[in-house]
Image 1: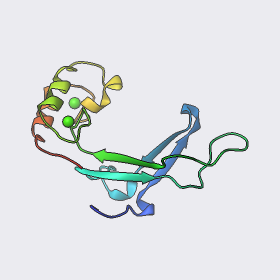
Image 2 (image 1 turned 30 degrees about the vertical axis):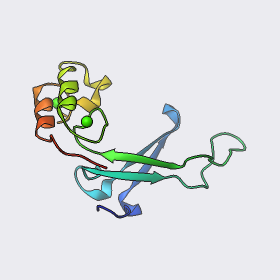
Image 3 (image 1 turned 180 degrees about the horizontal axis):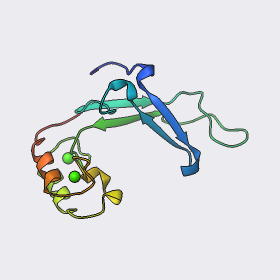
Image 4 (image 1 turned 180 degrees about the vertical axis):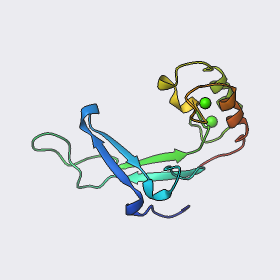
Length: 128
Ligand SMILES: [Ca+2]
Ligand SMILES: [Ca+2]
């Protein structure tokens, strides 16, 4: 997987217009969990043939490349798992997951010491 394109059959794109043109990408072809492998960076390239919504939609202009980093427990998004991440998780213990989903590292529906422990176990992991 690292260093190569994702096969088109591994990707599922879903457009949710009820939520304001939200495009969700999932990867059912990658196995379980349906997620991009950890500790890597991915570039999503939108086609030049995409158009804006509405009558007479305009061709998509500007930067069409989006970088996405896959790094479990990197809650502050700086590319490294370190004490800053576990501290951010600690500061949210007991907070509702719905508004803080990135801090629920083990995805059990609660933000608690298990999540800071999961971050601790990943200290030193990084992604480009
Ligand atoms: Ca981090
Ligand atoms: Ca949790």
